[in-house]
Image (tube, rainbow, N blue to C red; front, side):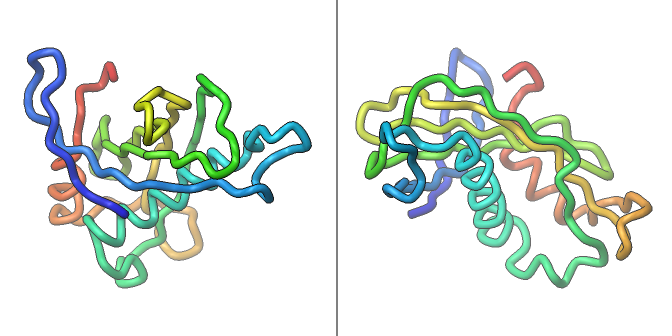
Length: 152
């Protein structure tokens, strides 16, 4: 399930957040039942690709360049267990002609407790990956729809 939410937080301007739910399974956990740390990066990638195809460009293979992740991070806040429904909220920030940052917040879907937060810097490169390309303006306009202030 994916959807776009409009939220107002602390009297700030209206922000559009894309939302998606995930369910981790036993295969995603260790012997103690904790979800492996690497899964959070997989979830970021899954949410990034689903958001991009649903909201930005239905066929990313039509772009004149390739999307690359220039950097990624994740701050772990609380443990996730198998079969716990996790809600991802995705927004954007620091949008430039050649790159933008994705912001991820993962919550327990039942309690709304923050589980982790992270981000990725996305760029577009020419085929072969040696030169940065500018994103088409229609892509950047769609990315701006999800933009939050830089300090979030």
